[in-house]
Image 1 (spheres, one colour):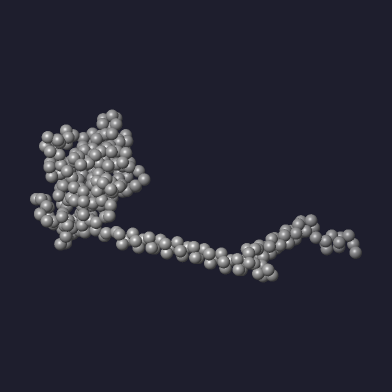
Image 2: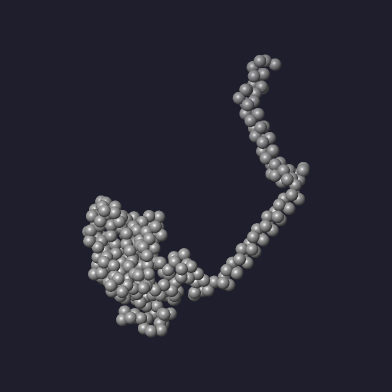
Length: 309
């Protein structure tokens, strides 16, 4: 046999390495298959079948017991829960009978900054859409039914379980969707409402007790609201502020008793000429005798920022 024939029959170094690699891979796969399930030993993941039967039974019993315990706890909770009257009320509630303010628009709940570019609809459309979507529930056709009553001349006696209709016309004609709620002209309107607290009623000031901040707009049947710059530079940049209606939120909507179809009273605050290109920190407060102001707990106040580019 010639040397040339021997070279043809014997594998090269590269071929031999490839053969060893395939053999090693085959052995590894065989080891893995045997680890998952070894037919010779009858084991699964190196544990006997009896072991897995007891393991599965243990965890099934554990989670079943946990589920039963949860359902029993929820049953006792639901028995104690009243669909109408909350169990925890008054000063025992988390809000301590001290409501806070809420504003719209808030399309992004991760920030309190309202920022847009004057004259550029794509920048302010999320804000105007949010206001419009919220006001939809105040349309006349959404406030129809036996549970709704008219209260503009005062709430009729013995109607605590009824819902007062809210007439959005009192929000004026300057803060309407046809005018983009003022955002197109750089005069944004902000919608205000009170957070709901069950059975809370405003306690009004006596005429001699009215705070000077709201003395020119105070009415005994309304809750006044003020907005101002939080810091000295904000006081310079906030510009003129218009309240619609001027006297604030009507008190005849209270108390909230979880009435079907209840609507919170609303008002608009229009920022007529905020400084352009600067972030303005604004703090707004409600003024009523039985509400204290605490910016840390957001009771009686709300803080947000406004930036008009």
